[in-house]
Image 1 (cartoon, rainbow, N blue to C red):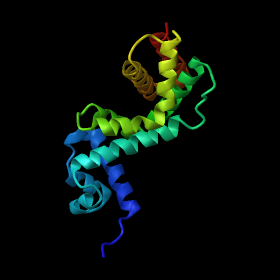
Image 2 (image 1 turned 135 degrees about the horizontal axis):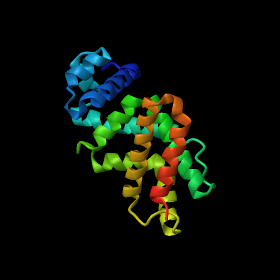
Image 3 (image 1 turned 45 degrees about the vertical axis):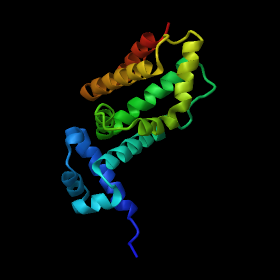
Length: 189
C-alpha cells in the first residue's frame, strides 16, 4: 500500500516553486524546485505528474492566496468606487506582503503555460469583482472596455503603486491614495 502524501511536502513544493518561478519564470527546473523544498526530484513527481501540472496547480494556489486577501468582506452592496477601492487596497496589501507570489503569478500568467481551464478556475473566487465591473460598464460608470482590459489596468496600476511604496515606504499612504486616484480616473467615464 502506498504511503499517504504529506501536506507539508506538497506545501513546501508549492512555496519553492513560487520562489523559483518568481526568480526564473517557467524556465525554473524541477530539480531546483525540489531542492528548494528539501526533497528529491522524484518526490516532486509523486505530488505533481509533470512540470506543467505543477504550474497549473501553482497558478491556482497563488490565485487562492490572492482571493483570500482580496475577497473577505468584499463590500457587495457598496458603490462602484468603494468596491474598486477595496479590491485595489487589498491587492496592494497582498502584493507588498507577498512579492514572490506576485511575481510568480504574473510570470505564469504571461508564460503561455497556464491553460484556459486553469485561468477560468483561478477567476472563480473573483466573480463578484468581474460582475461589478460588468455592471459598471453597463451603467456607464466604468469605461466601455472588455473586463480583461480593465483587469489589466487595475493590476498594472496596483503593481506600479506597490513598486513605488517599496522604493519610498515613508510615503506609503500618499502612494496608495495617488495609485487609487489614477486608477479610478483611468477606468471611469
